[in-house]
Image (cartoon, rainbow, N blue to C red; front, side):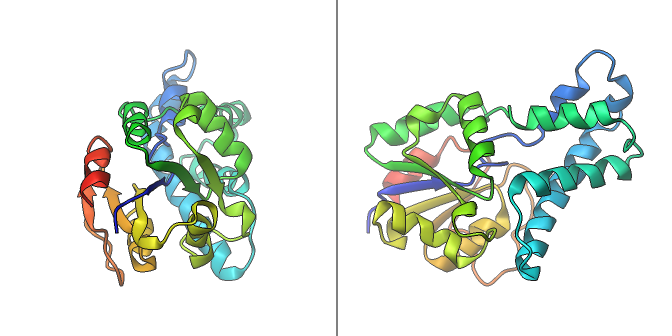
Length: 229
């Protein structure tokens, strides 16, 4: 079955999650933070993801903004910066203004020109996703932005992936699902999507029941992949 619909994870896939910490580190007066920013960005993302999984298992759902704040608080404390409330507020503000990776606008435009559906499927809250899409200027090349908040559980729960077929009326084998998270791409492959893992860091493949069909270093090759799948 030809691909009709291209679905993207948001954070780390379309949007650079390290941009908030990196940009804060470059601001005047943040020289002390600049020594820690890369480690804080790493911890922040790790805890953010871990808290989504743990809350799903514990049936204690909250929105992604809360786990984003919780993850940042852990990261700041781990690096001994928990007392800098101004830094915390600035980092959270910048998270609403994340940059898209450079290849994203042209890649999405190529998919739309080819007549394919395009959408985000994300753990992010609707408000956070709207802010990121607006900041990146990609709203005109997306057909929809789907959030887990409509089902009240984070990925990789099956009901999250169900949202794609419900929205676009397509079968799983018509979908190319793209994520920078190996676990997400693997879970989506197990669901029945054709999946591409954007492995920007060159990490090993996760040991999970299903594996991504394709591994890429960035998103440039997605339009060609969608046409050939």
